[in-house]
Image 1 (spheres, rainbow over the protein chains, first blue to last red):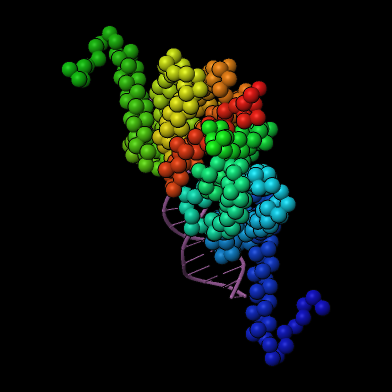
Image 2 (image 1 turned 60 degrees about the vertical axis):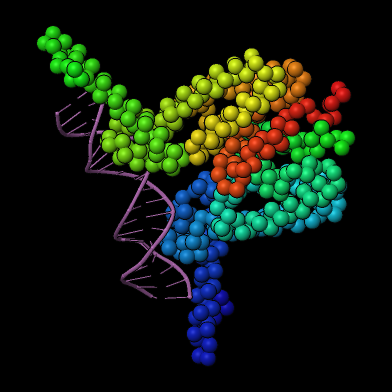
Length: 205
Length: 205
DNA sequence: ACCTGAACACCGTTCAAGT
DNA sequence: ACCTGAACACCGTTCAAGT
């Protein structure tokens, strides 16, 4: 049952299907292994090590994931989608400013999944044509929408952009991803959020 | 005049002196070369390349600078001293809050000397026993003194530490060291400074 | 004392050879 | 079609051998 022989009429198609299944299995196995290895060593983990531990040739890894960013993008896609959906939920259920700050807290937490990931996300602005940047664009759009709502509501200063808020949040996530500052993530986010509020001088504007 | 021959009575001492002079020349030359190479390639530049371009053996570089942080520390020492002195000057001539923010702007600008340096400075918190961390401690102390003065003056929220302010500033410097965000350094620092002010809810406290 | 560079153990990336 | 791993061009680090 598990190994059905190819019929005479569909041999080449069946072979192709088998091959695709093999490739697909490799793809999934590399991804699962990468998840473990990056959890251990961070986003700068050795790709050679990932291939070794997935027991595939190095070329196989590169065939499926031509760059480190491509691998990272595949690993993070689900989490990105989850955050985009969360933005919609928060926009529908929470006051604009609270929706924004709660979402940014989730973004910071999500960026902490792998050591070095916040820096990679913040660094997307430096080379915006990576696979990771493309996938992250939806994330930034979701954040920008929450920001605009909060700004329209007058709760958040109008002179910050979605990019500003995104990079500031990932920067705080980077600072607090390990070490003694790890305990201060929420507080540093609070400080940043206060900076995002309408400046004091404009309180009566 | 330039090449004085060793006298008979001081041969070994003279040899020692010559050797020390040679070593000193190597030290200085490596440092000068590193300044150029790091300016081109950032703090992650190849140390092999530095040795090659300084025309010294790789071992010579490692003898003088056993770690990358040691080299970085030697490169930055002057700038660190300059910033510490600047803190004293600002404390003596400017109102407390202005002294703090102006000094932090200079810190951010100084951290932008080499690409990747802000991240290295922010990362000091993650391994606090490097040569760079030791030299940076004076810098952080100077910032902490300015912070305490501004807090005592009631201008800055009391629930932030010197470490908080230091890492937030270097983080903003890291975000804005290149790319499209480079133009927004001053603005993002302003946002951060607003966050450091007494929280709005406490305005009448 | 100090300098040198080969040696070692790693990388990331490519690509001819296999199935 | 896809997989493999040797080959290439790099790293950082160490250390025996030179002067």
